[in-house]
Amino acid sequence: MTPILSRILHYAAYGAGVAVILVCAAALFLRLVVMPNVDHYRDDIEALASQAVGVPIRLSRIEAGWSGFNPRFSLRDVTLAHADGQAPLALPRVDATLSWLGLFTLDVRLRHLALYAPSLEIRRDTDGFIHVADIPVNRPGPPSPFPDWLLSQRHIMVSDGRLVWNDQQLGAPPLTLNRVNLILRNHNGRHELGIKASPPGDSAQALDVRADLHGDSIHDWERWQGKIYARVDRASASALARWAPWAQDQMRDGSGDLRFWITLGQGRIQSLTGDVRLADVALSLAEDRPDMRFETIEGRLGWTRNQDRHTFIAESMRFRIAGNPGLETASLRIQSRLDSDGKLVLTGARAKNLRLEALTALSGAIPMPPAYHGWIEKLVPRGYIERVELQSETPENYSLEA
Image 1 (cartoon, helix red, strand yellow):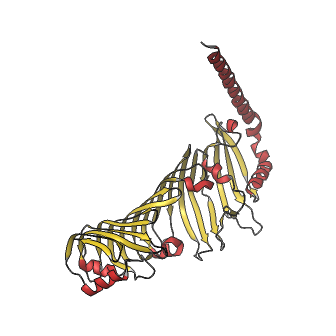
Image 2 (cartoon, rainbow, N blue to C red):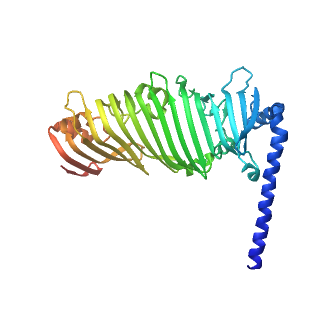
Image 3 (tube, one colour):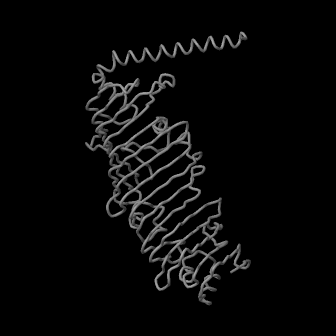
């Protein structure tokens, strides 16, 4: 054995011995000093937590125990106390199991964090600032370390929670989600999330969201990427119009079941694919065009973005328009780009198994040059097309194959 390797092994043995001594000393201190008298430190814990969060925090009781070799603490009736007496965050019970890794990272690390029947209010004020339990999270200034600390914890669980979203900027009534159950697993920048909740009765029957994301810091969102899956049963367009500002101008009417897969890249939505089963639908593709209306829609819808190019797809679609026969497994792909005014301009379209009567009825809602609209209104195409493809960069330069 070389002298260098012998020295490395020598120091490694010393380091391992020191680590064992530190863990054992901390365990003995917790077992003999802290845990038998943990409730006596309640005032100190409240003061430290209030200082860290910036809002007075009250604890009713603290209990301590062990989960295997790891110490476990149970906090009862945790609330954020405000001068007006309201509690935008109420935690009847919080169980936290400590991780010994915190001894080496010099911060608090949890092996498991469980919140039982919590009640949380999230609010966006008229200036666009978001407040979580009345604590601003996106105001200018030094960012809060709490979100990143939360994402560094190994396992977080929420059971039977209640979440209230109050959007004062949008002027919408508060959205209350009941029976919120959440599981979040974090490991080396990977974040696996699962949420189930019950929306208000008039908006949807059930909500199921799952995500597999990769990112190091919530304050460096531009580097995040991953996939999100969302399922909503018996969703209504009126609910989207009330609480989803991104859908107010597109989804005008309709109701049904939705399943969506979202791909994130560089902190932005790059693609969206959804399986839908809807009735009485009204969609708007452009502000200066009439709504696109369907009696029923079933199939797969999608959208992808590549810089200024946008692609809309409809695959294996069965839809019915008033006064027109329904289609079996029709497919449609529309390609467009953003012009200098920020409007979508048609650059290509492809369809299969399409009745021209249906295309004529929908063409008025599709953003394309006025010359195309005039051409369709003049000819009033009728019949059945197995396949058609249009390519166009300008109204004067196009190709059509059918």
